[in-house]
Length: 218
Image 1: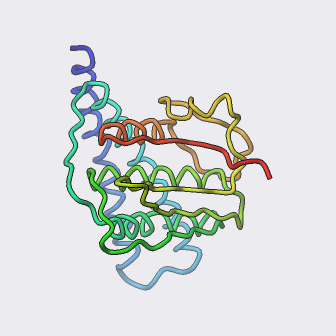
Image 2: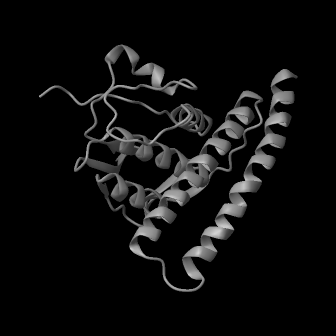
């Protein structure tokens, strides 16, 4: 009952918190498309506002999702998902952020007939969370790769980056809620410590697993 009550509270808070960003979105659209084209400096400012708005919305959504998970109210719509479509959607969301942070993002192509079974929206959100996290810790001019591979009847999505890695004794902890590591960040991007935790829950809810590992020593 306590988890359900908290879910109801979070649902009300989520609704109230989303109202101001909706106004921001509307005014951003007016500034970007009404009247004379913005100058380069103005475009940069508008991009910062848009990015900050998206960070806020992601935090709001993450808190709401965690509430649903804790209350056992998270639902999954399992269908056949065209992998190439998911990759294209993820690339469209994270590519501007990668460019802004000065890192190279490579999204490998997948055959059109490669089909994964899961919840399309949640698979997409997992990959966005993973790539965004990789962008946070990858130094400028570093490379991030999103790829897929078929292992028997299973399809693996793989995100690799050139960040500093995680201490071996803390690898398992990165999927715990509110867990953050301050080690050698290369980006001013911030988070709320929920993205990886929710991604792990989503993967498990669809019958999959989410695994983190460091690259082997050269």
